Image 1: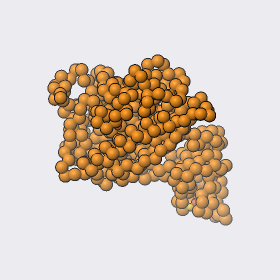
Image 2: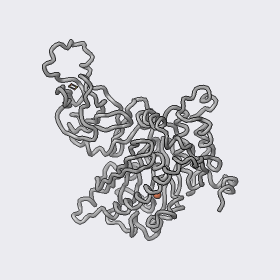
Image 3: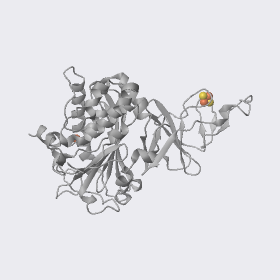
Image 4: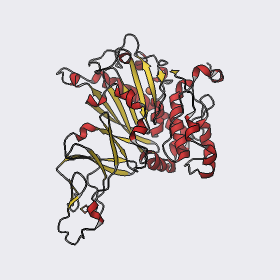
Length: 424
Ligand code: FES
Ligand SMILES: [Fe+2]
């Protein structure tokens, strides 16, 4: 990949190592993390415990997931007033509700009576209020307590009248986001300039065409790292290499908590499909340049957005255990294509399902490798600079106690020593 130049070093802005030495509460030994933060060329990968330790996994759920903004799916799940769904983020359950005014609201999925969950995680419903299934306490769509059957001795000052406790939520280009701890920076700061980059493809106007679920025997970070590099493409993705040159593209300079860039399409290819042909239509509003590229963005921690000229693909990752990750893959298309009676999304779905399965095999092999006593922190190729950026978010996050900004992409053209270290 080619790379834009980047003048300042954001790690020096975000991580003061001298302060950390006296205050760190990292789940991993900082001595193993500092090499991860070195410039690419000298940087090493994450230590094994980052992928295998139950203690690190628990720390990540609390700090990287509950303490950050996590995608909870498409807004279309909550289209009408009264629509409700419950999601799990980290160890927290969050109830998401479309209120009477059409606003998105989030509450901890906990009844004020004795704590029963208001809706089973993963379930959806539509009703005029929120009703606890245990003893039928009722709440308005604004979360206020409306009724507690046969409960006559509550004083008017009892705190249960506050109703459900609100949780931080946000809606962005047709996706729902949750921050269970309420302590993450504002959502706009989290996404930074990804907003304009993704906004150009207008994903909020797209319609869901297909959903696949996978369960992969690998740590969630191995799946994200695999997404962020095409150094492996010539080895394991022959079909992908026929429609996109694996060494093409740029890395973007993020101002938020994300990493990504673009790749070019081969001259004959209109999109990413086995033949390179598209059965759909171009996304509305795309300029000529964007119709010849695919954009890959990974928003911390686990929302991967792949923008194609004629469809958008997302991966949402849910870490189950240190070595198991559930993945939801969704394909979104313009309404104009979906409304055609003969439209068949399989040209895009089958291509990425095949590519996904090739990737999962590699990820599961890496998981077995990092769990071996033979694993050592390894070096990264320049083509893996997005992996390096992602790993600086993780290592910096361990040291800071919460999500951290990535370093800039590598300055390949200005790093002759780096080139020398990694020549064939
Ligand atoms: S726990 Fe919800 S009504 Fe009793
Ligand atoms: Fe891949």
